[in-house]
Image (tube, rainbow, N blue to C red; front, side, top):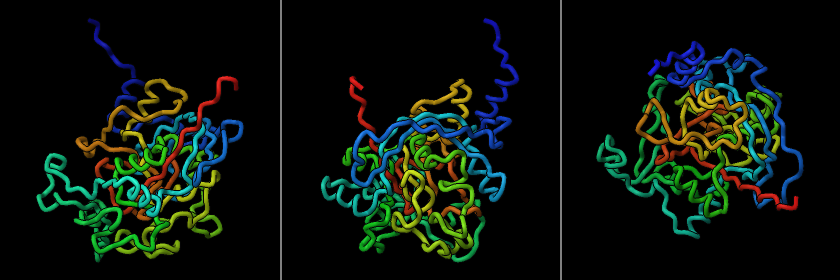
Length: 369
């Protein structure tokens, strides 16, 4: 059998795949983004309650480091798995205007008796390396340290707290009473998917989420444009102050905010940046975009993500994509409120900065149209 000898271009692609990053000459150029082309026509009918029509169409998906503004290591790291910029087409769909709230999730639980993953004690089989004292029902909570700490060890500000769940999002003594309009948190992927199914909806694909979040804009750094604070106005709930010691709340909220406290994007969607991360249906791989490029796909149509998860940092933990960033995002550590950046989450874990919103597939056109 003749021996295969890869060309220089193929070798470059393979190296990029191994590193989780596909290199291309124009990925930091404005020309990496081509115009968003929305589908023509009106919505197929009245909007379901609390949802808006997203027309779908073709757009440039992914993220580059802004040429101006952020130039921190956090920003550089945030785009490593969001390249190369590539063309994607998505059909039109309905999307929730806001993240699912505590009140909405409570109605689901009351109607179905559903018990979230965080309310069930984990097993040794699920988490073989966990100490026995952690094998009790609970979840992960952001816990600010008393003094500055190195930012290369997240365990300095995250703790597993028994008794934490969606009703008690920061520990057993916390409550959601009086917080009906806060986004529900401490929900893992299965919890979000169960709610979506009950509501006659589903979780968005990563491509649907990004198309919707961009609001019709092309290649902008944020959901509203390229200026983080246009005319000095706060546009999202993020972290101010020294991370992770103290969120000073200059944007009006130290910690989580009720939904829809900041301006909506061009499609009428609130909080597509900051506040809480949002689950997407795609499995996470850092090299997924590179693989599309390597496969020669010029326009990915309604992509569903890779067949399985792979995170080189934690290869044994299946992860789904999360999008949008949270109230903990800051240019000191994480700038994933930038459009096109990607997050990831263990499917069996929630936290007090992870929520979700749903989408609904548009009905198919009748044969006589």
